[in-house]
Image 1 (cartoon, rainbow, N blue to C red):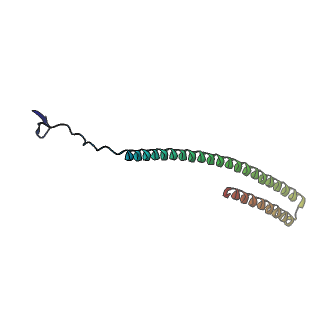
Image 2 (image 1 turned 90 degrees about the vertical axis):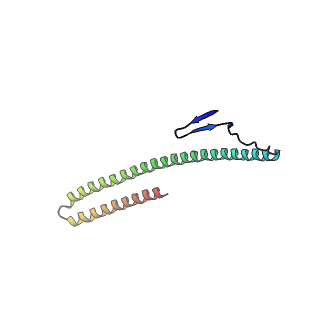
Image 3 (image 1 turned 180 degrees about the horizontal axis):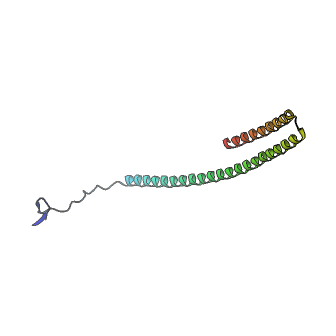
Length: 138
């Protein structure tokens, strides 16, 4: 007689066999074929999903690469336009110095010329800003 000791009690196991699953009746050939077909379908879906994931990752990388190129181009364009604005600023400063020296006491003429130069520079800066915003939104 075998005894099994636990913390609380001692159980006697007389004549017990290990449990086994009940035997299943044999499946008909058509049912097995249907199961096999379903397994193949599931496996096909798995491969299709894996292919789609790979395609999505490739598309994502392509989009990111295109975005980086676009950003580089926008930065280069911005630098060029900034250089244009700085050239206008230098030109306006030089012209203002010449006008101040030539005008002597006629400050109204100097003021009109300076206002015209500044209006031109503002218009250029506004146009540059609009082009950059349009480029960012496109």
